[in-house]
Length: 398
Image (cartoon, rainbow, N blue to C red; front, side, top):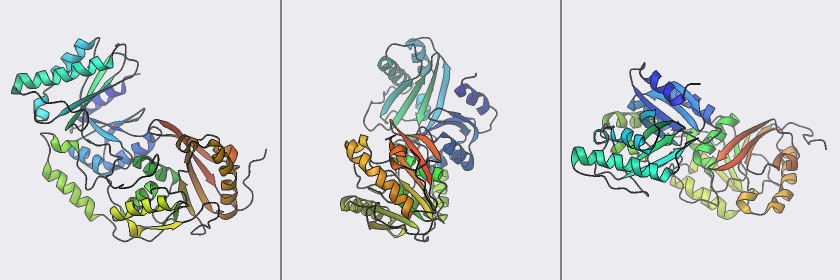
């Protein structure tokens, strides 16, 4: 089977844009990202583990950074080729025209990841790539860029396979799931792009009632509110592509203006959030107010085991506490059965989507899951369980 990075390189040569990119995403959301990138205009998409390679011009790169709700980063591929040792990786990096792409005044960071790589030390590979970049700058400009591993202006990513190396320039900077909207957060908050992906997987649309009955600091609610208002998640933040020499300010400004013109300032109040903890509810209220979304979500302090649904039917999406996060496994084992009873008794007509890393949930909640989707919240493996609530018993038989 042909290397997927090589596939994109060949296909890029057939497309006028001639730029190859890679958009990473939480594992499990690759098909959702594929649909999103197609809708944004990406061409020659190749789905790989953890994201998608695609082809387009830099205007598309800007647009994906601005509008994608699922991507974690957008990387511009600048090299792909074979290697046998660290010296050949150094020569590959040294051959590239780094000063054409960014100024030596920008700080840099090199990040190396690998799969089936025969080399002994990725730290040494990282050092050799950094040396190659700095040596090329020294040759052509007499100035070497400085290294900043905390907040670099330019991030260079390298991915090593067993005999191929791919080099990227990161166009995003801060990860795209950091929307810059969350001012207060609870313990182990859900990543924003994972929340957006869960909403897509649920089939929820802004014309349907939505409830998060264990909303915490409001990540799912904020993503739903932005979707309902058609607010691009990248508006109001900065990106690494603004530091590249080819940055087109006119094109970027035009994209941002067009995005703002499509926003919906007023939408029906169909998004509901609850939590039994007042501190969590206040954090959600703080975040929604700071993001200008407070009038899009209705918040109430309530216990999911006792509350009534806000409508006759709708979509329930939630990320309840689980043992990895709270450390109280026994307490959660006692919580799940009454949660299943509450859903069965009060939420007939609703579809429920529960994300958890606690794989005991389907057995303990006593409901038959109609779908189980593996997802990752960072490095934490989770499952998104779908329960279609209908009148009558849904209890699993022993």
